[in-house]
Length: 213
Image 1: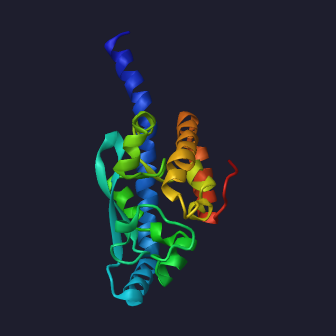
Image 2: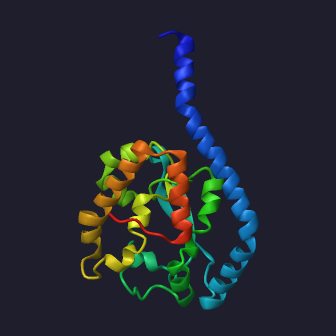
């Protein structure tokens, strides 16, 4: 193969990723411009609920195993993560405003900032904390060749994840059943994803439509 052929092949491989990044940036900036009043209303509601911080940040593992701070609107009481990383059904740590935000996935909106910064993309496997990534490092070595995302087929299948987890053995169930299945779904989608399939995932996410497993 000539040097020019090699360059052409490299360009073909990278063009879709550049195109996806450009699309993400346009959609992200448009979303932030239109949604800033919603951000202000949610921020005020979170603050008035218990006078705590508006945002919750948590260290997650991103592309090529690089860490970043995931941003969400805070939906739990201050220090809730000290009692576990997972959310049980009817978790007492969730605030009144937080329950509403979680029901409609509004707590995820600040992740537009993560997309703007280049930590995430719109469609991709959800970013995990390091503890669970290390348990499934081989799978994440494939998945994290791309940026993690806000939504993908696994996210849609487990849209109401907290409602299916048992409060008695929540972490064991997550590690043994839920996370392995989510990783399989994410890897399968990553192998054949297209721009149109990404659009379909985004539309389903906005409309609140789940996927069957």
